[in-house]
Image (cartoon, rainbow, N blue to C red; front, side, top):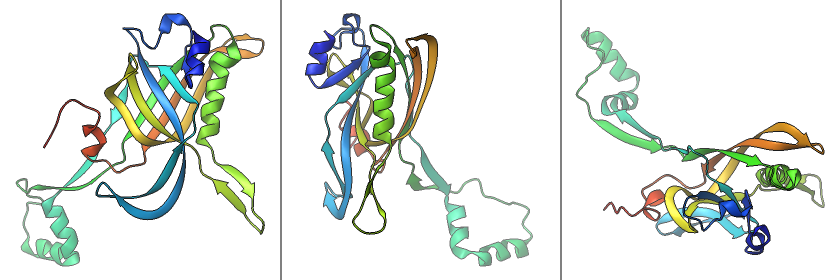
Amino acid sequence: MAKEKEAEGVKFYPSHTRYNPNGNYYLWIYLKPYSVEYTKPSMSNGIISNISTKPLGGTLAFLAPMELMDNVNHTWESQENIITKLLGTVGSAKQALSLDTEAHQVNTALVYRSSDRRKVDLTLNLSVYEDAYKDVVEPVNILRIHSAPSFSQKRGIGTKVDLPTVFKIQTKYCSKEVPLINFRHAVLTSVQPTFKGPYLQGYPSHCEMTLSFADMEHLSKRSFSEYGKVSVS
């Protein structure tokens, strides 16, 4: 079964038949790597974009943990604060001269300012089945390599930096995408493996690995609308 899965271009962790990706009980997290390069800004679907990506192959799929946490944060600010910033010290001076004991007005409207890039932390568990290196250590090393840049010497003085890999992240059930944790292009900002024994021929038999991802795209309704069944006009 493991060989059949790898032949499809996807490596599954765990790989044995009990956790068949087409089974009725298991959710999988697919990490598809892409190379990325920056280009001249252009308009794509009404959004300015200056990145170009190409799939690299070698998709990794991990059995989803019992908990998945997604972070979506927006900044809203009191209209009074915005006006005060625009007026600068003049506004502060007028408030001081008025001798008003009220420092703030509670009935001012909130004004949208910005949205943070979407972030997600995934804690994945790897355990030995047949080969401690391939089942536990190899996927960690693959992700550590993808997360790092590479250096190559240029003709002149200086070093050329090739960018780290970015990922398309999908949550899938029975090979069908589920609207939970999905990113078109995400950067891998942290790989934190905790290796655990017993050690078999020098390799750990278990690993708890935390991966931190950040979305390359600005957060908008478009970030979710293509993955869910709910339509918001």
